[in-house]
Length: 159
Length: 74
Image (cartoon, rainbow over the protein chains, first blue to last red):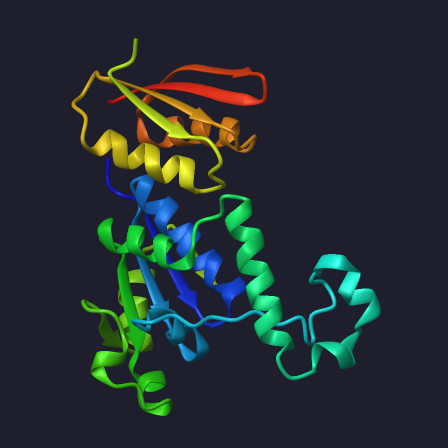
């Protein structure tokens, strides 16, 4: 049985949006898919050695907040200095309590399972990434690099 | 008795599947893995995992809010 292939483009660099690409890539690899993830724009943050991902309720009315803070502190409250840090802390606590994997853990599973992680060269140039900023074993490439794999992938996702 | 035990209680999607896959990697063909999980989503997920990987799901059951599975490595 030839391996199925999954190709993902990860474009977002917040804590909440870090989950879909790593959950899907790690699970796909467990199911026997050959998997490649292309990290572009803010998504390139997800390849940094030291992840410092945050979540914000600003501009996201769909995000539930503890203690009905979304009701008492609408948009303006979410814009207060320090709110992003508080939100991120609360979200991480909640995730831990519910047995949800950390982004680092899911990323490690991907690396162990030989999921190919590719950084966007153009983004690295744009945001002045240095070689040592990202985890080891990352190849850089461009749109053609993505299509070389995605061209015959069974599933392609833009996240 | 299964050949291997995996306690996946308290873990949420997709960790039970990922841990099971990891355990299966170190086992040989025909051996069985017994998994206990608390994530209700794991019932459908282990069915789907078995179907797609060829590892056979010998048993799937619930007892007191805990879910129990036995997988036979292909």
